[in-house]
Length: 256
Image (cartoon, rainbow, N blue to C red; front, side, top):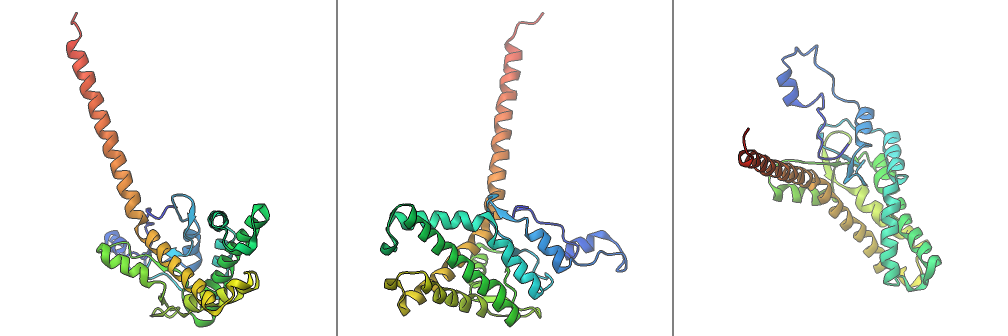
């Protein structure tokens, strides 16, 4: 399911009001397991997995088991491997880190480091710490309102998250998880990049990348809808031109 497709969730107030059913006949809100089934179909451009995203602000909280399951689903998806390969290629071109060398061996080390950063950071930030701190690792897409408000909402998700009890607060899991991941990554990064400054920089770089990802997820449905609208308009214009051409051709042809 693409992010520009908004599922008609049973607990959507607008749907409930329009149904005209009694309270006893209304459908119950989706369970957390049912919500995960929907989330695990979401992608941007059919490639970028966005399993940790929901557009239901009243989504049921996840259990610890579900948080770990969601993490494993994301970590084993082809998307992080493709992304790691792309980032490894950039670092290979820049010979960064220099100690990794060149050739396929150097590329392999950079690929392993890139995926290791992703896996470790997400393990702590989206599974272990959210379970211990009772925080929801998902991004709650706003989907409406001014562009400024939505952009700020997406950026704030790096430091602000929903609690399992329904409240909101500082996103300790994400920030601390990224720093823990950056610290552990010193095991496989060369000595020249194991300084305290480098470690903190890597941790906050991952947090900054999270902001970019949230912005893409927040506004991709708008981009997809705009593209679809332009495609329809272009097709309609082309059809109108063809109809006019056919009509002109019929008028110009000799009558029997």
